[in-house]
Image (tube, rainbow, N blue to C red):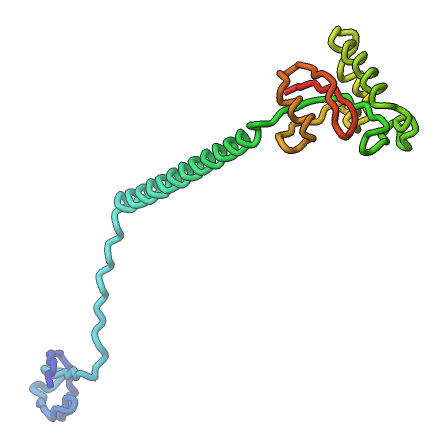
Length: 223
């Protein structure tokens, strides 16, 4: 066991008595008659409270180093954001390109046309929006319908009448409300004679009389 000894100075009484220092049983005699100073042994054992030594405070990291780290983090985040934005842009372009291709593919092989229909007693449904009960239609022969439509076509070709105006007044098809416009359609969507006649036309052309199960038509291709 290690012991730390230090020497202190202690004042003694004048009665000439002895002074006992701690548990070491070491005795010192008075060497003066009045308040003389004698050496005193002070004992420190391992059970004494530890001497606390303050740890040296760690130096704060330089501000320049912290700023550099923050700047580096910002650059990394900016770079990651740029890459993410570029990826999104690329995906959007691919998606847009795909949609355009699909739209183009859908448009290939399609036409758009208007028509004027006159029904007759041989039509598969001898009634229309302007003759719901079919009283006129049932009394109209095919020959009469063809004759009537031939005159109409001639007036349109000569410029005396406008196709859309005549269609809205005369046509037995519900498309009359749109000037005869059927909208775009592809092959296999219309009756075969109607389809073949329409696809054979150039844009702006008007067909001859076309006969279908619905009645007799003249067709104008508009796209």
